Structure formats: C-alpha cells, structure tokens
Length: 292
Ligand SMILES: C[S@@+](CC[C@H](N)C(=O)[O-])C[C@H]1O[C@@H](n2cnc3c(N)ncnc32)[C@H](O)[C@@H]1O
Image (cartoon, rainbow, N blue to C red; front, side):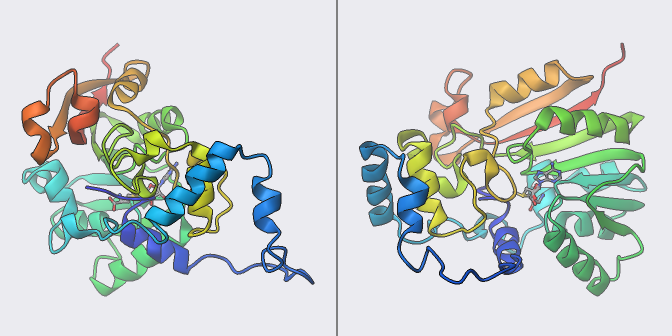
C-alpha cells in the first residue's frame, strides 16, 4: 500500500514536471562540489556516517516504489470496499488529495453525479484533466487546487499522512461537506508501519533508525525539491500515526463512525490494539459531522 511521496506514479509524473531552474548561475556550486559541504556543514559525524550507510544501502530509489499493489485494480474499490460505488452513486463527491485523478475518474465512471478532485500539485491536476478528457468524463470531473462547492461525500485516499496541516484540512472538509455527508478515508502506511517513512524507508523501519538529517541528505541526491525536513518533501509527509489521527478527529467537529486498522497480511497474527501502530497496513475510516 506504499504511496511514497504520493503514489509512485504520481510522484514520478510530478518530478518530470519540475520547473526548470530560473537562472543559471555563472558557477554552480553543485558542480564545484561545494554544495554538499555548504548544505551539510552542521551535520554531526553520526549524521554523516548514517548518510554514507544509506548511500551504500540504497544509491537509488528503494525498489518497493513500483505501484504494484494497485496494478490492474481500481484503487478506490480496493481501499474503500466493493460497496463504495453504490454508496456514492448520484452524489457530488470531493476527492481530497486526488493526485493524478485515477480514483476521481473511477468514481465518475461508476455513477457519481460530479467529482471534484483537489490537490496542491498543479502538474498532477493537469494530468488528471487530460485523463478525464481521454476517458470521456471531463464534464463530470473537475480538478482544482481549491473549491467552495459543497459535496455529499468526501473521499481521501493515501493522503492523511501527507497533509502538512491535517487539522486545517479537516476543518476545510467540514466546510465543504453537506450536513448529512460523510468522509470516507483510507490512508497509510502510517508512521510506525515498516515502510511508514515512504521513500525514507530504505528497509523496514529505516526511517525510525536513521536521523532525519541523514535521511534528508540521502534523499537530496535523488530529489531536488530542496526539502530540509520530512514535512517539506514534495506532496508532504506529516509522520501521521493512528493515535494522532484519532486525537485530531476527536478535537474536530467530526465523529469517527468507524475506524479499521487493517493488519499487514504477514504480521496479522501479531496484530492487536497494542501492536497496531507497527502492524497495520492502512487505516480505513468513516467520519460524519458531530450532532452537537
Ligand atoms: C500519496 S498521494 C495520493 C494520491 C491519490 N489519492 C492516490 O491515492 O493515488 C497524496 C496526495 O495528497 C496531495 N496533498 C498533500 N497535501 C495536500 C493538501 N493540503 N491539499 C490537497 N492535496 C494535498 C499530494 O499532492 C498528493 O498528490
């Protein structure tokens, strides 16, 4: 269920659309071999050693970033269950954190009245619009960075662990949702999952073992968005845990109608309330507006 720095496909696509450098300096410090020195001068000896170990273990992107789990499948159906299309038939639906639009398009093709895909990354929205046109649902789907249009339901897939400010996102969802509406969300891997560091999990739980500085430095050899913290990576990574999510919802004007922490198949015998932060693959939940 890994969706490293957004879904692998989405990320790659986004990377391909990275804006080109605005101005070429007369001497690029990167070429001069100084960038490394300047950017990491304050790293401790331990950070530097960890960076070298990470480089040695994974000089390239970790191999799990293949998007394999959803190959030839409809992701929204895999994550939210077979009933999802019936539940959303004839409804106005927002897909919050829609990425390159596949799920919004699937909802449109399966009976939603109108689907509004929201994402912060314009290059992904552009791809989503093109796909919607090709698949003949451009009149049903709208892809944009924001909306004020009210919806009967909000779907959010693999995104709650990416929102920089999930509290504000929930408030925005509250504004956008009709009184009787519901949020159907699935997200993960959460932070303590073996691959909860997404790209940073060069092996299971590596993101908890290595320092943030070492991991960021390792990543900066592969991605050039200038992130200096986990939270600054393109598409966001907020270190969401299951208990933090529950706390955020409890403090919001929503109530959790249901929450399921789905066990990682190979660890299902170890999965229980005490271990679930480490042994859950994804969290699936339904939120409704609080009555008071
Ligand atoms: C892992 S991707 C998931 C994309 C898609 N839902 C899917 O399942 O393939 C997470 C998406 O959330 C988007 N995102 C992050 N912060 C956001 C925000 N504040 N508002 C809307 N989208 C956001 C990212 O740009 C990214 O496309």
